[in-house]
Length: 189
Image (cartoon, rainbow, N blue to C red; front, top):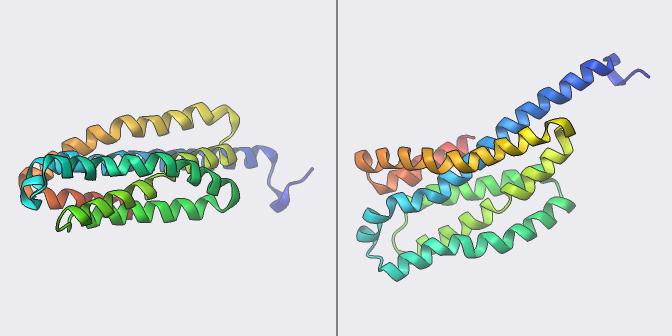
């Protein structure tokens, strides 16, 4: 059996492993950024609430809006991943969540913050179903444990790095710059 292009089976297997490793890094980074971006509001909260005149109830509603939409939309995102291009869905989701993160730096009050938190939840909902689909499709079975560990590592390291970076940005530049910087970094990814 001679594969297309004349490559040996060993070369094709090595190519699959290289592609799998690159995908693991990209997906781990996406989940890392997912958790950095969703946690930014907690870092900005003390100064943001005062500047925007948010009551505790309004802040709580804006904060929780992300989770109220994120959880059920994941099921829909999974359904979409099973029927349409997971790659395009990931791109659209990441663009939506990055843009909503960045735009939170320009929020003028409760309504805009609420809408942007909902958009963030919709955008981030693609992360896990999309990652799972891509891992199943491209990562060899013997490397899927590592792939899932890389995704889980993003869950743990994202809040840690985001809190540190966000705190540094908050103390030097103010709360709005947390969202602007985090959004730009995610867009660059």
